[in-house]
Length: 121
Image (tube, rainbow, N blue to C red; front, side, top):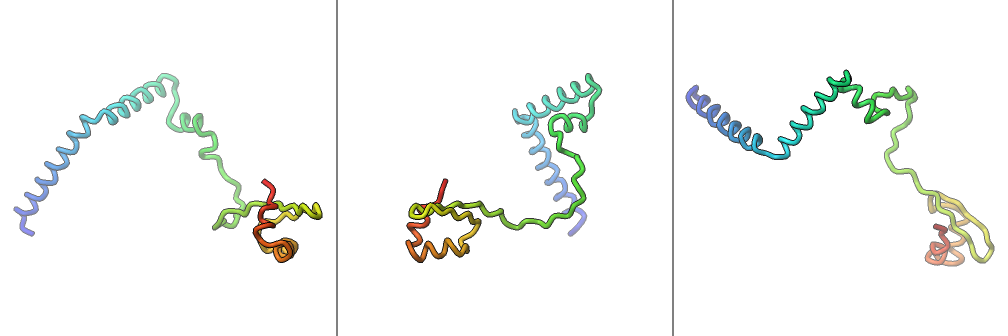
């Protein structure tokens, strides 16, 4: 690319950025954010507080060192405990999965749809 072509491309990019800057200056949302930031800065000066102090007030858990215990990263959500009650015998089965021996026996005996209706809320 020639130097002249580079110059014209840079000039065109600059014009586009200036147009974008001008449109941002007229944005009401941006004006409100700038006003908020200025008032916040003034308030922090007035009370002698810094940004870290404000963050600590608004989010106390931010920056608190966590324990150095390495826990394995969970890749899926923990299973929910389900409680089934057999209305014929009054027996309860608590399970987090469908691979429970007693639950399988009930499903064979009474049918899966019937046993699923025994799920307690």
